[in-house]
Image (cartoon, rainbow, N blue to C red; front, side, top):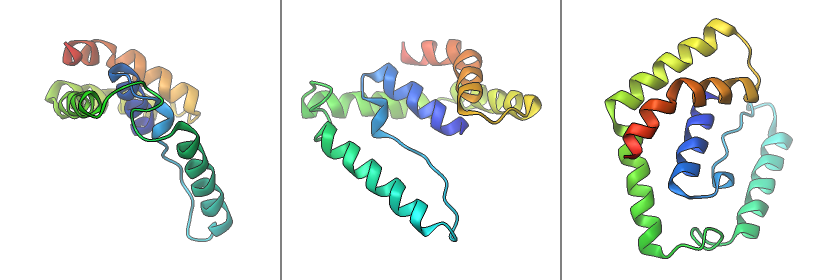
Length: 117
């Protein structure tokens, strides 16, 4: 869930729709749930259209923004900040997406802002 929050934050910061990323869990025993998750995500992507279309960006702009996102998450300061945020999540032991996203956004705000330049 922490990775989900981080990717959503970075996508938002680089101007790409957060809905383009989804990380859900389904065990091997949950085939119907897996099918449902994939079907829903596929439908959502069809509604958004090709990458960049819903964002109003050209192919070159998308490429530049994705490269920027990769650079951001590759920085050591961001990775260390993410590690510290996940420690805080484990310490709190509150496993809701809202709580985890809040911690990720709060604990990582400075390192992400600095990395985004």
